[in-house]
Image (cartoon, rainbow, N blue to C red; front, side):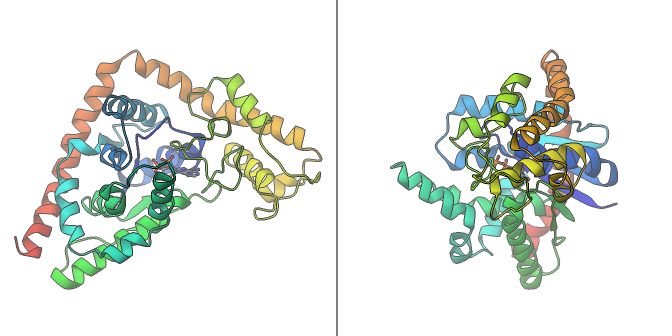
Length: 328
Ligand code: ADP
């Protein structure tokens, strides 16, 4: 059976982008076909200015949302990264095979570092080394496949490179993983800024649909989405990014194809209305399940404790092997 690993950062409230780009595939496909682990990667939330109490709260909320999205602890392992020491242990070894040049070339590092500097803040060293810790997250579990949105593809590529380099230099130790991207909605864009992705830690609130938004809030956000000056509904990602984004969201929610759907619409208003309805419907069961889970915090606690135990048992032998191989 294939091993699958993926994660979500508790840096903000989870968005429709997280759901369509990742969580849904984890719940509907991956947990049924593979031996899979899904993780709230809280150490990654410390790479930018953070409030300790907020990170703790968001970690718990993210874990609850993973379960609300349909992850079933009888089928997969759900846990929090910092509960398993092996991630940090392995990360240091991988820092010893990665180079600072390849870290500085990472697109997300460049963008996030530039944003921090613009705000007058300093850039934490961990922001630079973040992709190495992510490689450790993946490699510690002998992962075959990493289901992620398009924005994480470069980081999974780095994990591949580091695994191959380590294996070549110190003997076969790691499984070489690969990314798997969803067919549609691999990059959901911000509804107000269709040039940038819908990211949970971004500042464009009105353009982000959060998984726990009330239905009327979802409708308002979608109805106010920035479209283009044209009138025709055509699927053109480069020329008409706002409309293309709506078509992709609608396609992802209804199981259709964005190009084919474009032919069914003659006005942006109708497209927005149907997209809003489709998003509300997709989020309805998730919101209901989230409410049930919030009423039973002991359950979430138990799932995370058992998950960490299972994860630790899987990661330890791999990381121990890596320590031996590298000469420790
Ligand atoms: P964020 O950028 O929201 O902080 P994370 O880094 O926590 O997201 O990513 C969790 C998962 O969600 C990853 O697999 C990532 O690729 C996916 N993802 C995040 N944003 C989007 C988006 N706008 N569209 C599609 N997938 C996304």
